Image (tube, rainbow, N blue to C red; front, side, top):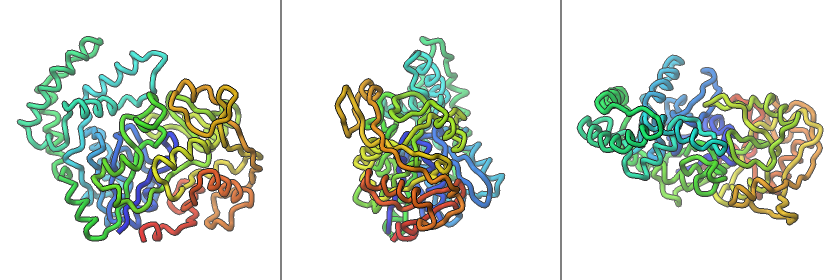
Length: 430
């Protein structure tokens, strides 16, 4: 039995979806453990190109059990749209389950999200406006609605009435619209009917899989530098997307995790606000954006692009106990004559090797770079490490030295087969 956690190593959008899709071919179960439909995983396989926001990327393998875990916040309307899109491609859902403990994103969460973001003015976080943060807030306030509540009309009515007492007062105070109790109740009872076949107590399913010695893949959303505790607060997500959050959101004990795979782009991107020490606002940044198609899967917003930040990467490795690296989009660097790696920061004239907790300080750091020669030859058709150009191998080896973690997989294209396996996927589940 192996439990493998897939963790985003930067500010999201590292290509976790295609990595999960690749590894899911060997897993018995895939659990999406955190986040909501504010995240998007693009999967390209023989059925086509799919942008998944809630459904685990293992859904394309009918032999794999897929669970939307307790740590996820679910917008039922968005989920039903996603299921309809997948059904059109011939995907079936006999292998899909939704935790009855997962919290629900309500329409008033989206309205609250919009108002809160507008009130921030110049300090906008850059949320997707999907209501994810307010839904997590209600979870902690203990006034949230859970997916299991949708199956019990009386319980749902009781919880919804209690929540709306506070929500409508708040919304109207800031110019929003009050939410009608009866209409909202009926709408979500209907969602419960449509999703009834999938909403289950998932903890027994997970523990049964572990007791049978089955291989489990934990699929994360967002990434460690967006962690609500350890990320660039307040420019973070509302959940714990790292390895600790994987255990919490999936219902698996930390000692049951066999491997933690950190997924990193061969450069760095960020979407929305917040400090970004290695950001490039020049022609090289534009080149990375266009060659890498760096536009948000969920929002379509252009991503900010920059050089690889080894200081932040080491920090993420330490936080998550990452024991294998997965590098994505190496091929995007193919045309560059010189490639830079940030190896330390300078803050107020002093060289530092850590990520400051204060965004004021992180915004002031100057990256200290090490320059490496590029390889200026295509890598997208290569399938073994030995076939890579010498300078590409040198770049990856330097990243391993700086992070202290060996490489398992190198992605040189968006398709499932566009991968170089330094550690065979099957061995990760051995």
